[in-house]
Image 1 (cartoon, rainbow, N blue to C red):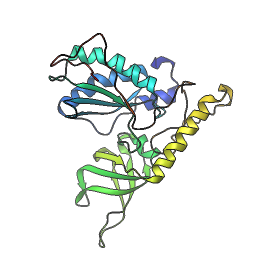
Image 2 (tube, one colour):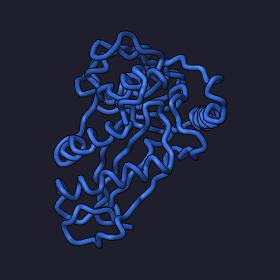
Image 3 (cartoon, rainbow, N blue to C red):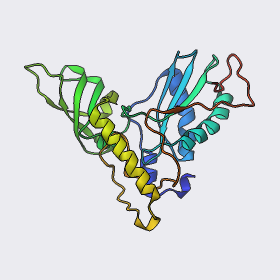
Image 4 (cartoon, rainbow, N blue to C red):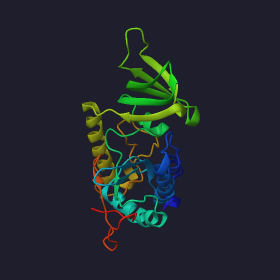
Length: 254
């Protein structure tokens, strides 16, 4: 599937993440990542929680930042047998394929570029100016790849602290957008623009290849038409009807 993508989209698809999982989640990410890439999706994060027993959540997106129900169904169908074979989790678990959500984790440089102007919580792996945690607005990104630096205006400063800070994104530990009214408005607007783009004749579709500002969507391109977008945060769980759940089996369940 990836052979049919444009060069710009391939670059977005193969853009490395700034953060990575640890332990069993890291092993699952190493298994799921190549499968999703081959399908034309980007892995965002892998999370394992004790919700309803054990839940394995895999967040994904297209290179243009959109996700729809069919994307999640396809990813679930293709990932389930691979996870069954590799069996990375000992207890029985529920597989949950989802979009990153409106208040999404920021895991790539391009995530920060399209989130300019929005509020975020940042945690660094290494302290900057004597602290690791910051909250405020993303003001810009300087540089590319491993050399990129984040320009950030803090809203959690004390009287004697500087509001404007800058730090290398390679030192990122965790980052997530803060759910605000502005973020919700931009997300809804981006969704409508993507649907409008998908309904346009191909000859009228512009291809600028540049990330647009917003809560997690690139300028819509290479998007399948007449397919419903999955609102951010909506999850789909797809069980294998021919494979009953067994203790220790790596199969999704309701």
